[in-house]
Length: 189
Ligand SMILES: Nc1nc2c(ncn2[C@@H]2O[C@H](COP(=O)(O)OP(=O)(O)O)[C@@H](OP(=O)(O)OP(=O)(O)O)[C@H]2O)c(=O)[nH]1
Image (tube, rainbow, N blue to C red; front, side):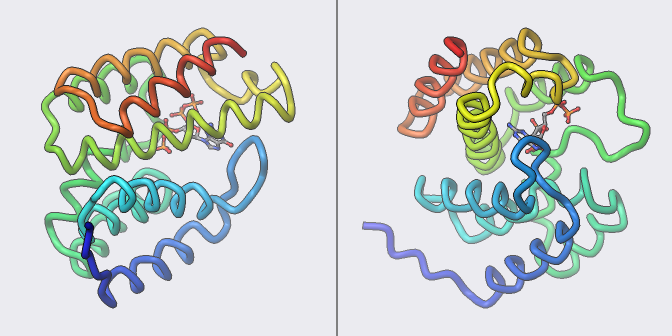
């Protein structure tokens, strides 16, 4: 049985993430962006993740979407180096303009191959929730959803299949196999 007890640091990160992303929404459904952060965090904790991993899950898009290096330093001061290292491992880039889509995705896949177990857990939870969102959004809105993704349907499916290959390189676990089932479903939409 998992006996993890979350501390006030987790509660602080929850409020901080909610405020940081307060004006951001999910691009298909339009719901508050914090829904994604909460789902990813729940997946990390359900998979046996630590409090540091859960805090990193809450803040995994903070550097990329909400302030770059300034936000990184703020997170370092509030939550420490270990949390920042996990977030950096889940961050594609923090510079603007962003490099081309395929270049970013290939670099993400390359870095993931050498990433720590903590980074891999938060990354997998992130991509699992995004893949589930895609299936749910497709059911509601149909093929028009692909217009919202820079690489369209083909490129997006390529990325998810490559991610699955990388997650499986270190063996498999329950979350990886759930990801595989969702990707199979996504490939059939
Ligand atoms: N499925 C889905 N994705 C959405 C939605 N709103 C925002 N996103 C984000 O869109 C990103 C994928 O969009 P793309 O056009 O393919 O790529 P890009 O934003 O990286 O350029 C995902 O980021 P990512 O970099 O792959 O992951 P993340 O770490 O930013 O979450 C995902 O988080 C939504 O409503 N549904």
